[in-house]
Image 1: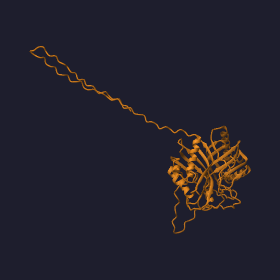
Image 2: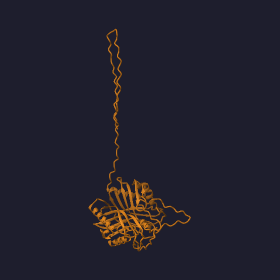
Image 3: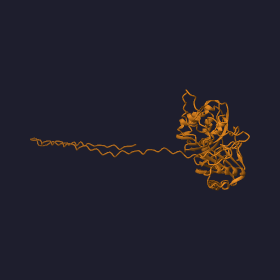
Image 4: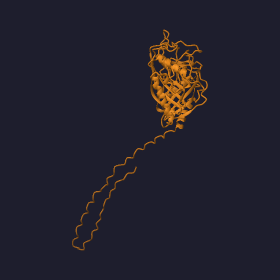
Length: 427
């Protein structure tokens, strides 16, 4: 910054006096006049330099967003937790649907979430099967696998090593900022499936998935007419569901549609079976309702999030009515081909619904003379870090493996449709 300085000038007049020719009296010498007062020019007000704004990050391309998302999983799989932590924004949040409050901040997400899960499953691995991009949101269907050879800390308390393997599908929605850092994570999976695979709950559950999908599509939303048409068709089906019109709720279903619901032990295949399951659910939950929070489309896929609620005032196959109300969050992914829905994947926590319906027994009482141990204060794991729903089997009687009982959690449009098999249906 430049600044103008004042100056002053002093005038020093010198007068040379002539000598008088008169020898008798010399004229008096006049005293010198005092110099004028020095003047200083007023300095202008200093100029304030404008603060330079930091350049804003250039928005990422869709390809860069996918790479940032994949980098987080690569760091977790390599157990490079320093690098994993660096992928999260300063005030990032990580939430497991219906599994307690979210973790806040990179440290908590890394230490409590990622490291917590890796302690129980040292060989934990997350393999992304499907990636959908919409603006700054990246959604992935992730196959999580690992062997429980360490103590697994859950909100219900620590689970000793079982030496059993888990392999299950989860869904993860990740919001990124313009710098490619994760700002908000929402993840959903079925806790009862994890507990069943660990041998903690003997009720029917989905078998361990060993291999991932043959194809692993990456699709970016473009706002195409196909996407708009698919989204409009999906919204009409939601309207049909809320009117309890099973045919309208499955208006775009292909004859060979596959419903995959995480909380059920097997898929429902075909439109006929799907209609049957939906009608059974409407009888068991006459006030069943869907409240959508968001819905968007990317290519042939539609993604929706929201809440399913209802009151169990009717029997549903082997499950007797409980008279209790239930409300669970869900993430649904539909795949449409030429206007027909070929696949529906429904992600929710069936264990949370079972607990609300009173199908899970209370915790066993502590032996006399021993103080009850408080449950772990740690929050559920984050970013591809599932937790087992620990503790004993629900009051609902387990069916033989040859005749799997439907999950107690009704699902959106498909009442008991479980998670997809591996490899997944055609993409």
